[in-house]
Amino acid sequence: MRSGPAITTGQYKTVRGLSRGLSVLRALNQSAGGIATLTELAQACAMHRTTVKRLLETLRADGFVRHSDREGQYYLTFEVRRLSEGFEDEAWVSDVAGPAMRDAVRRIVWPCDLATPEAGFMVVRESTHRLSALSQHRAMIGEKLPMLVTAAGRAYLAACGEVEREALLELLRRRDDRWGELARDDALVRRTIRETLRRGHAYNDGEWIREAAFAAIAVPVVAGRRLIGAVNMVFPKAAVSRQDLEARFAPELAKLARAIGRGAKPLVGG
Image 1 (cartoon, rainbow, N blue to C red):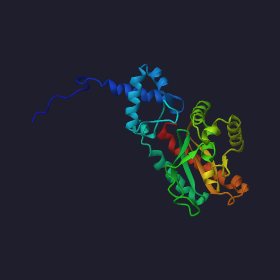
Image 2 (tube, helix red, strand yellow):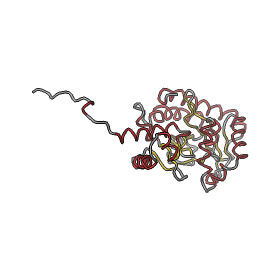
Image 3 (tube, rainbow, N blue to C red):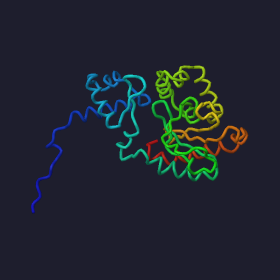
């Protein structure tokens, strides 16, 4: 049986709406911290605000963008990463971070979380709470950690560049809750970043009221030159001395972060 003639893309008209939607995604991705207002995106894409709004709402319905707490502002979700050069959101988490964290359980003993930023919070992507005999928490995956009162948040905020840091803080400043109040305290923010950089790791001594009985240390995770998250170690406040934190656990946590960063570099383009 003879096959029909080959079909070439030239026989089809391009879909203008798809091209416009991709332009909006591209502009949002290039915005500081992956966050932008409707007006900013309309200007970047040279489109009418109504058109951009319609495209954004379509992308939001499909899970690629979300509203921020500030009206008119949008940010990318991890769903977008599933589209980039075959990269799947879970690739470096499951293939690199997961095995490295499981291997570190024997050395670190206390439970650890890997978190990445999303809309002014750190979201737990991988955890050893289920593996550590010392854990008093379970089901941490997906937990949102406040940026300014948790070790993971402080580690990421101190390590990121000025543009991204300001974008994250601005997102928080617009909130009308405790997190917004803290972000508007410039002296507190500067002190937190300064102390974290001086110490070489972030520290939380129960400032997160919901977890006031627990402390944590954290370090950033860097793939090449790209900051991709933070990894912490969580423990009851009185269970670990500061001497042990400095001499034993902080170096082990830094070692874990380096292992994750080295393995993740080819996957995230660092």
